[in-house]
Image 1 (tube, one colour):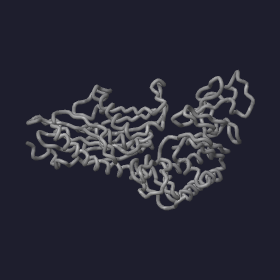
Image 2: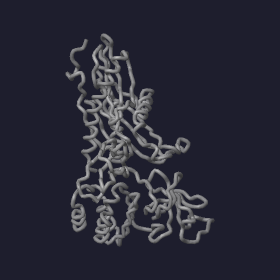
Image 3: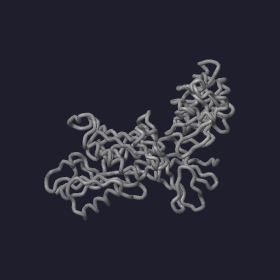
Length: 231
Length: 221
């Protein structure tokens, strides 16, 4: 049984959140988002013309996400280029964001979202989704609302919010379970829910409730970041 | 225009829940609530609520004057890049002069910049026209590209800002609604000064008393 978290946080406490928009000047919109030392940078290009033409959809725009870890973001150097893991995360990021982006306004076009993790300390996909939502808003893309994401973990028997790398690698007792989730910021609907590990249905419900509460705090930080800009 | 301070809103933020308001651009209605769908400044004018975007791409509207670049020639017209998610088409029937169809490059060649007016926005494609005063090929001068959402600020109330720059630098300036700006002056120096002034307006678009600032900048230059 764990009584205390490695970094001394309360069980429902997230690491320090930092958010900022406008970090990539050449992009249509961009943002940086950090949970403690996990840092993601997202840049949005578009809506713009989509080539090759056979990918075009006359009913709506294509949302194309690209997620990757920078080779220096992890302790052991990551070989540059996409991996099986990064393809999967790109895809789930797309699915997490698609419900809020009003793609039907831009038929045949594409909106490109690039997410690079510059420092990885677990919960990178959550930081990536938060940064991407900010970058899309900053790019002036019409959206129904924002998306806020957070991970909930079960370390042995204890539910914790915003898992860090050390907790993720916990192996004693019941081991570590990692549940990244994303919520539509205002309506609270779930747009991402993944699970790596073991958890009972009752505990999963508790975990989602914890995540929802934490996502609200993430949303406050996102609003703050957007309202800071005057440009 | 309401002069009360405009609030920055984020997508999903409720602007007002009072009944009787109409949702304008960048908003949607859910019951009585008017909710922002874009990041920008909430503006309530009479009963119309809209969001003035701070960023974003240019979406063509009928009647807009825009500046485009010829990127392709087809058998019956030209394709223009207009700094938007879509290309625009200029058919030969929308040219005010007689056209010999054998060689369209004689009139507009690839790479030429054209001042045009949006004639039609359909589901599939945008048609533009060069029939009208001041429309047609640009032969000389300077082209700069600014953020399309800053165009209203560059033009100013009733054209006040652009007229100030025009008078001070003695340049002819045409601001396309798509963010492409054409500057033509007597000398390159004056054109560059005008370009700098326009850049200044886009960078400091939130500062109050911007007109005075630009005036000062131009006097120095």
